[in-house]
Length: 85
Image 1 (cartoon, rainbow, N blue to C red):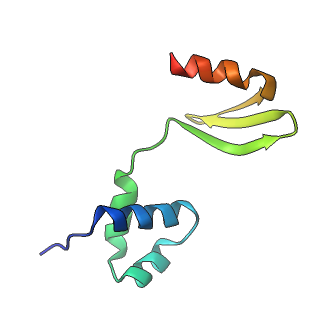
Image 2 (cartoon, rainbow, N blue to C red):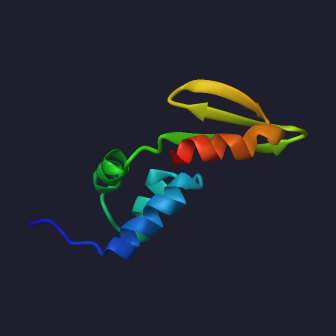
């Protein structure tokens, strides 16, 4: 019989994993199977755009679908307007 975990706990665990906590550590802390956490990670929607570094100097570095992009901070507002449409 499978256990039911609250959506709050699932969110908490996925957030901790995203911030760098290992699956093994999360499993031990919460008393659940490693495979359960791996299933949650695999089913988590992948973001279209990941910010790989916060603004450094005058550029913002992005990775969009595996393509690395470096954008001038002056052009950021134009980028977000284009993404809205």
